[in-house]
Length: 418
Ligand SMILES: Cc1cc2nc3c(=O)[nH]c(=O)nc-3n(C[C@H](O)[C@H](O)[C@H](O)COP(=O)(O)OP(=O)(O)OC[C@H]3O[C@@H](n4cnc5c(N)ncnc54)[C@H](O)[C@@H]3O)c2cc1C
Image 1: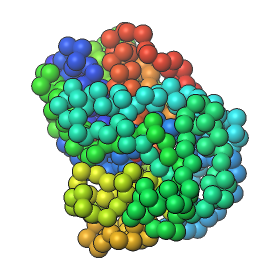
Image 2 (image 1 turned 90 degrees about the vertical axis):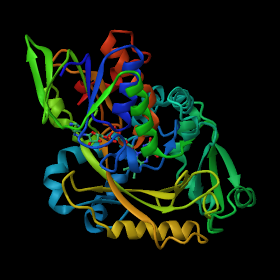
Image 3 (image 1 turned 135 degrees about the vertical axis):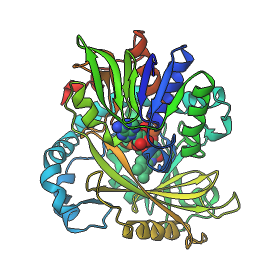
């Protein structure tokens, strides 16, 4: 089989890339053993936030003091499986270092902001072109709820950094919060509302719709796993897959948490880990009790979102590698959090899911040309911001493949930074 570009992975990063490449008239093949945005992909089960304000890396100053707790409590909001510690230790140390000072957080925030700014509008534009405008609500805003103003003030650094980047963050007192989120437990008496942010209405369906759109522009999806590259004179000649070779001169590594091996074959060693996350979704229509605006419940460290298909509670970070079985006790915890935040919602029959955030230690993706094989482009490692960051990432991939000038400075996203 022949193509101009092979996109490896049909998560949100792969399909956004495929759309941008197909819109430029290139012949695109997307390889993924699973369906676009299927349950195997992080892009299926995320919290649906188009949070252009999610600019700080996950680790924060002083968080290293909690490492013993992460190892001791397998069901805490962040847990590291002790047996996996020796393997993950180098990554974990870099992860902690990336958030060790406010200055580092500020630098990362300024860099990530270039990728995420305007994301809700970019998503709305691509969804409209794909014929699914209803899947993106670019104007919903997003909320973070605290029990008290004091709890918010203890969490002030992140909000200060956001405000200094020009992001509007509105403070909402108890009475107003109760008016705006009538189903939210009254245990929560303070919130911050970020009007610039938006949400997706169904992340899995959005991926599928974007791939369908790329197909109408001539793209093809092959159910196969990419295993490597064939190069001639240092230039890409083919992507090798479990269904044979795809001859092409360009390829995009967008295989989420499983991208590191392919990246190494293309000449770059990138520290990439899975920050495993879970969700529970109560299926149903708009009459289900739940959030009016998607809300992060600060003390429970979960996001609760009303989707087209029901109400979803997503979150948690479990570091145990990509191959370990899910720990479904975590889903039970999510159920408890959902019922605790929205007591009117019956969570008995909630669907459960686990997926892999593809995470670099510094919370920034790798968006760069590969060094070892000319023609290969990396686009992976989006961690907690892959959905929101995917729209501009797809544009950047197309710019790198076609030789257009990238619309933002890609230095902070280089594969060589590690
Ligand atoms: C609980 C949870 C909540 C989240 N909430 C949000 C949120 O609200 N907002 C946000 O922006 N982000 C959120 N994220 C993060 C976001 O979901 C991810 O960053 C994003 O989905 C990553 O997309 P991806 O395309 O890189 O990877 P994936 O979606 O994982 O897709 C990778 C694809 O590559 C395929 N693949 C793997 N290896 C190969 C191979 N060798 N050959 C071919 N195909 C291969 C896989 O089958 C898969 O389909 C959340 C994540 C989790 C887990």
